[in-house]
Image (tube, rainbow, N blue to C red; front, side, top):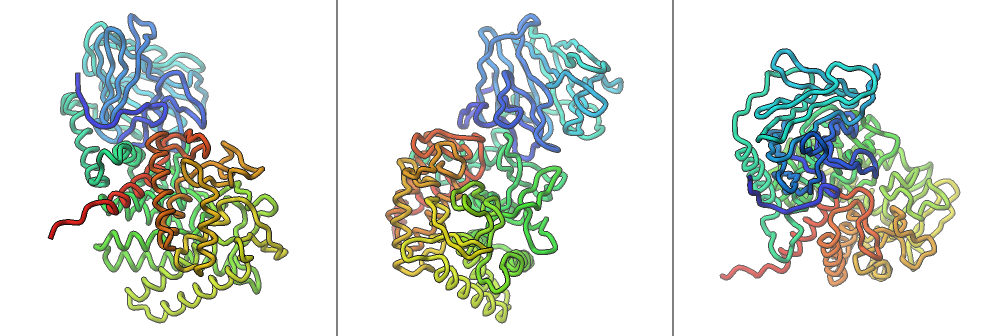
Length: 575
């Protein structure tokens, strides 16, 4: 039996996968849907459970406990086990003794337009599933032992697959590919496959979290969530990309990617830069970024907030080797993105840009949008001010002095309008873009202008910081005031704690001089992840993980905050 190192995890929480692969092994077969058995789940053309994997004994299903580490997945029974490991991004190897394995189509129904067809290839004798959902083929090659097929070439509804006998040691490979490839030939042993996968992950975690230690116990698992959710370029995904999850949130949304880029910057700078740039590969003629990108679709019906200037400022500090051509491209793209907001999201005579819907803000159902959706809000203005200042700074670096003055003037005008129109002396309000009426709410979104840090007047930032403190629970800042009548424990952006708001607030408070509060928020959120993992969001009062349970921007937030905390407390080198 192989022995492996690395963090153990539950595949109900985190899919077992491999950097670059478009599929994982998981019981999650649809949104919030957990199957009884593990499946090979692919994310090409959407989330598709393709193959069901069931351990067997003497032809019947066998009870088996499942355990996983970054390089190996194991089903363990009383008298045997089955092991699975990734050999490459599109090939897994499985072996067993004492237990067999049934590998079958997840959906028994086959129509002319859906389902999985199964046949045995006369070229090499391999068993092949060809799936309408993904549009790909899945080839099973028996390397040792015996297997019996059921339903080969059958049409209609019925069982399709093969049963690998467990009465002798056996081994098979499963590949995901397009139309054809040479017959599979094993070039290494199963143990060598495991060790190679282990080395790949170890190199990754050593690069992105070299600072990890007893005070950051979740760092390796956070790194695994990012590593295992990475896919190779395919379809509309133009670069190596970290999906938000290899559960059902299997897209790149146009602000989520920023946090993944920051978490990767110090250790994997090229991959980090790909994360930042990927959404700009799909920038539309108006300068807008898509709402989201995935293998087979790009959506433009909403946008996401312009936090990209804030992100680029940090990336430039961490990626000093960016060449002029990359900076020029980033500048031009960021300028078009900013102009989109200034030209297309400001009404006649208006100085402030507006959202069309809560989805544009990333806070889909925040109470800020309860009374009206098309609003001017302080978070949007603040993010855009930061972006305009970053453009000005980058223009100076690129010797575009005239541009720098123009961007600086636009930033100052926008900040002044935000304070004049949205600040009432005690709090920020949202203003209707159609009527000019203002309303306040108990949403944390109304306090996100703290992202400006020391760009806010002292009295404003101190007041906002005090209001943020009221949102704190034992686990961090709740997105709706916990005493609000609109607070919901699992209300998406109406209560739960989220990673991006936490990171943006922590950074803004720190730059605003409220370092004690920033330290407190960082500590609470890091402890939350160490307790509850890397869920999409968390119950603000209990800390329980909610929704998708393997979300990369949550893992990225942990790595960002843990790395910064470790750097702050590290002893100075002796001189």
